[in-house]
Each structure stands twice: as structure tokens, then as C-alpha cells.
Length: 216
Image 1 (cartoon, helix red, strand yellow):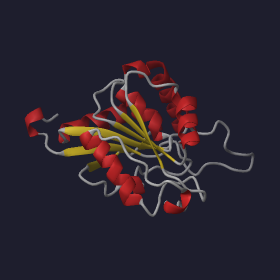
Image 2: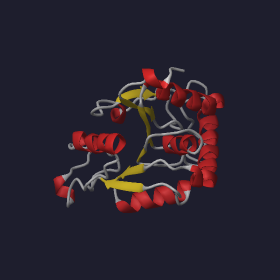
Image 3: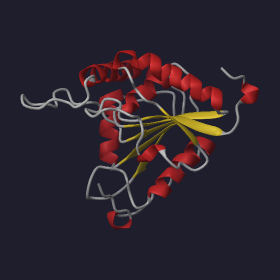
Image 4: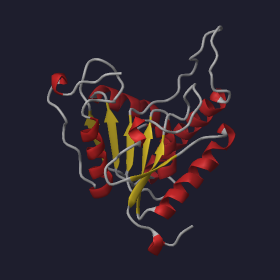
């Protein structure tokens, strides 16, 4: 690991939807072009070793940047919180936090990803670990969600009520879909950047759904 004198700038470990039924390559639209932040994308090549790989990924990111946060999306949010309970993190951003479905497939349907069921099991274990140990998480947190209801329900159901950390929320209003990729994508990413770099709480992006259109 590089010494602290060699670390410069700011960056983040980006954890995508690691329990997706499709093959996981780590990248998403949220992992690109975040102003002022370098990005190291976590790729899970072996679901059985996911936790070890997550810890190694964060340690590597922390060795590169003086300021190092964690940005996670979907089921990756459980991993982000579990990491923040054990290792120093300069801020956490949870984008549309979720847990994998318990029984998402019917008799005639199977996941494309061969290790899907193992990945889902690991993510649920990480969520349970985070829920038990959130008192140890002292990093400021930003939850980016489709609506206040979605944000509170997802965080409470998946992770309980965080303790000892400041929780900020940014709601992207709209009626079309739950995906958070919007015509104001740059403004969302700008708010994420200011939060991680300067601990600046985000301001509402719009007062009504017509001002911020969401599309899938």
C-alpha cells in the first residue's frame, strides 16, 4: 500500500448491482464522469470471495487517493455499508438502495449469471452484518432515491436505522420510472461530488416532477 504522502486527489470505490441476475462487470452510468472524482469500479469475479475482494478493492482505492469515498448502487449498497463499518471511508453514497429478491425466478426461468444465487446470499449476509454494526459507521451518508418513501423504506428495510453518522437524502422527482438516470444527470453527479469532497448537503433538484423528468 502506498504511504499517505503519495496519495493525491480524491476518488471513490464504485460498487454496482453486485447481486444482479446478469453477469456483473461493475460499471454503470453512475460510475462515469463524476466531477472531481476518480473512480475505481469494483468487479466481482467470484461470488464466493466477494467480501475479501471488496475489502481489497477499498484498500487499493484508499492507497490511491487522499480522499476516498464509496458510491454504491442497488444491491451494492449493502456491501458499501458493511465496508464502512470496518474500514475508514470518506463518505458513502447509496443510489437506489435495494436487497435482492428472495425468490425472483419461476420454474421456467433461470438467471443468466451462473453465481447469482451465491451472490444474492452474500449480499443478504452483508446487509445483516451492516444492520448489526451500523453503530460503528461514522462516515457521512447520502441516499439518492426516486422519492422520500422509496428512500426511507429501502434503507429501513435493508439496513435498519443508521447510528453515529449523518444521513442526507437527495430525491430525484418524476413519475415515469424508478431508474435514476435523468436529464439532470450532471446535477445529480455534481451533488454527489460536492457531498464527498466538501461534506456539502445536497439541495432539492426540483420542486415538482415536470422540472426533473425521469426516463428508463
